[in-house]
Amino acid sequence: MENTGREYTKNDLKAQLREMGLRGDETILIHSSMKAIGSVEGGAETVLDALMEFFSEGLLLLPTHTWKTVHEAQPVFDVKREAACVGILPNLFMRRDGVIRSAHPTHSMAGCGRNAEAYLDGEEYCNTPCTPGGCYDRLRSVEGKILLIGVGHERNTYIHSVEEVLNVPNRLSAKPMKLQIIMADGTKRQVYMRKHYNPIQPHISEDFVKLTQAFLDCGAALNFLFGSAECILCDARKLFEVTRYVLAPDPECLVTGKEIDRDRWSC
Image (tube, rainbow, N blue to C red):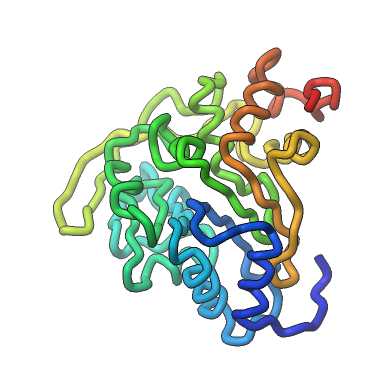
């Protein structure tokens, strides 16, 4: 969205969250573009203050992925020190007091609030980016929300999780990477991790936008504003159901088809 020139305050941002129908006690995963939010009094730190204060009774989650920097050539992931490759807000968030970061070597997540430690525990045992039963997949079982701030479904990692649960073919590398995790307590753990891979689409998530209209039509997603950023507020369980329904006749259609015909869903 075009920048309005307005400078937003923390209270403005919290009011916009309330306008989305959010209460503050949700489990919510936020993907974000600070640039899209626009001018905020106090900058990125104020944005985090607004989010952490608003969701103080819930569980606030931000991705802290490291897939760009942790791979075969650089196989060590340090939970406490490795920077995230997904923007300024995740990097600032994971350094804050009370925030816990999971130990997944390529698709870690940071969180604070209700049961954060338990929710993020055990990710070092995953062997795929969004392993079924892991912290992405669990969003649907806890009635979780996903808020895309200034980004579209091409940044919605949860859809990778849906594809893994549905066992969509040609989404993961055949051969795993051998990686090392340096845990928060300094201990080291060797793991084997497969990565996202498709022979015809090097960036699988770019095709997730083909589901945008299906999610809107079926009530799995709604459009709002946060600052100046166009946002999509999603219901994780409904996203799963719509995606499963659309993919059922042709599980690889997101990558192999130019678009998804509206006849493929009826909501």
